Amino acid sequence: MSERPLTPAFLESPFVKEKVLLGMPLRTYVKSLFTPWNAIAAAILLAGIPTLVFRFWRGLGAVSNLSQTNPWGIWVAFDIVCGVALAAGGYTVACAVYIFGQKDYRPILRPAILTGFLGYALVVFGLIVDLGQPWRLPYQFFLTPGTTAVMYEVGWCVMLYLMVLGLEFLPAALEWLGLVKVRRLLGSLTIGIIVLGVTLSTLHQSSLGAFFLMTPGKLHPLWYSPFLPIFFFVSSISAGIGMVIVESAISHRAFHDQLDPAAPVDLDKITLGLAKGGAVVLFAYFFIRLQGLVASGRFDLLATGWGAWYLFEMLGFVLLPSLLFALAARRHSARLARAAGLLTVLGVILNRFNVSLIAFNWNVADRYVPSAGEVITSLTIVTIGVLVFRWIVNRMPVVHEHPDWRGAH
Amino acid sequence: MHEHSLLSPYTAKALEYGLAITYLLLFIPFWRFVQGETPAHAFGFGWFQVPNGVHLHAGHAWARPEGGMVEVGLDDFAHKLVGPLDQLRLPEIGAPVRQGQKAFSLVAGGQELDVLSPIDGHVVAVNEALRAHPEGALRDPYGAGWLMKVEPRWLTGNLKNLFTGEGARRFLDAAAGRLAQQLTPQLGVVLQDGGTPVHGIARALDPEHWDEMARRFLGGK
Image (tube, rainbow over all chains, first blue to last red; front, side, top):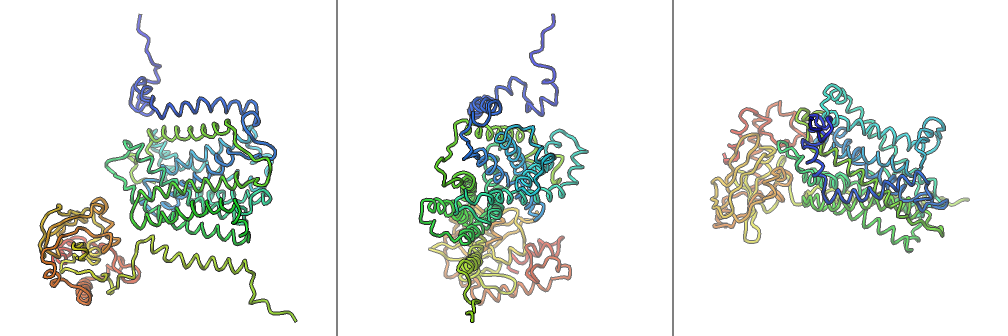
């Protein structure tokens, strides 16, 4: 009697072994997954996936503290509004490399695009979690289009931009799969795809701000402004720069073995270049925000508790990172630039939370506090993003160039 | 009759315009700070720059006494002549250097070029940051671009052999003049801003034998 094979035949195929199992036998690969970080991720998913199932099964009320008074919670504030801003690194770097010809930033382009792509995919996922009934998603595009609604434009832009980001990232996947002809065809379309991506980003980053123009009675006057679309667009550039600095620093440390020793990347130099951009954008953003305050004329509110919170955001998370970026560029300190990058990211998160959650419905008695189910769901979404990012970077040419496609678009 | 109201703008509008102008005025020093330029300390001699307090050697290394030590670097002319550096080969700490003799080497475009020391003494520090990123020296040749610090032996005597102030101006003018004699119409493509030579002028002038020209200038000839 012949011995039964321990593993299914497809796991023994060269493709699966080399491309999926990273050249390891299945048993070794599975063993390599037992790490402390994976244990934490598994714990989050074990709690989060049943919560997600429960949310779709029993509805919003079963897992969230959302109500008629507070219909938007952290799923909107964090997963969608913050998610879109933090995914801006993709268009920021793509614009720098392809539109402004700053080829020095090429090494960080693919990680930025991948972060953007996964970020937007999770935004859509978060949106579906918040809205429920995912089969109704096409309604707003095709069946009941509200052509005068900001949400209509946001919906179209996010959907199209997600597709464009997918196309922007596809070359890495095609190089990994060895599909040379399709990869070459896609390479010839690069500039068109990038231009489309940058255009769509500028449109919907700002229209996400325009979305809050409909809520003058609900949003605190220190945050409400007719300039909200401009605030959102300009701050998305700083968010993109901050995210790229932080993400590239983490990636280069976490995926050090993926770097190509034949083509060393001077990440400090790239970081310092981005720091200059961050300093200028945040400096401009600070003054644009002040213009909003001047236009509203509500200086009296600065003397209130909300005023202190507003100044905390403006001085600590807009002006301070701008000055730190400037100092980092001046002193050629990449470490300081990374600290400023982190502060910028936290600042954009704080701003989006303020606009969509903290200073939103500021005057109602029934203030919203997220439930444990909402927090676990958001953590699960972020964890899925991190795990997918790591899975892709460990396999596809993201932080290094594919040897056959060096310098190709 | 109504009073003329053109000169009484709304307060909010006045504040808005005031804020915009404040931003523009503040942006100038802010950008200069970010760029790390110190134009107030440098004065132009036509094409090439040299700040006050810097002593130039005929081989285009500079020396600046500071607190008992002397900072040594490569002047703006040499940087623009040679262009982007691939590598800097700086001496070991403690190594002796003699005025007019080789102090360190540059590697650019596959060629190694020796640079002469402007003073006598012992090396006490080298700019480690520039070893990894030699291009940093090009950005700020007289500031962050210092290459080594030397404990001087005959500082007063050495300084007498170097160019400073008006002498440095004439020296760089003369070097620029010699370079100008070698300009060809083809160089027009490497000029920027209507006349300032780009980095790597020697390579642009004579791609085949540029290193010989660079060696002539760095050798003080």
